[in-house]
Image (cartoon, rainbow, N blue to C red; front, side, top):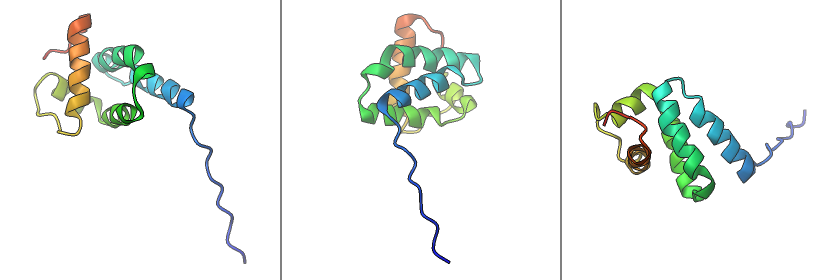
Length: 101
């Protein structure tokens, strides 16, 4: 019996990725994370480099409880997430989004 053909999934377009990330940023589960991440996404997604998008997506893959603990200073932020989270927190401070830090 011949091996089944592998069908390659279509590549995600840049526009589709931005839309997907924006939706995920605003539908976190914890309202504080919606405001922090969603607000940052609205202001910055379209201007991010591919690496910045990768870093943003990596941060969003974390659980909200962990993100909230890092954002409020209750736990130390993992080194690979710190630059992106620091940018978000600086944006929150600048725009008045409370994060408790």
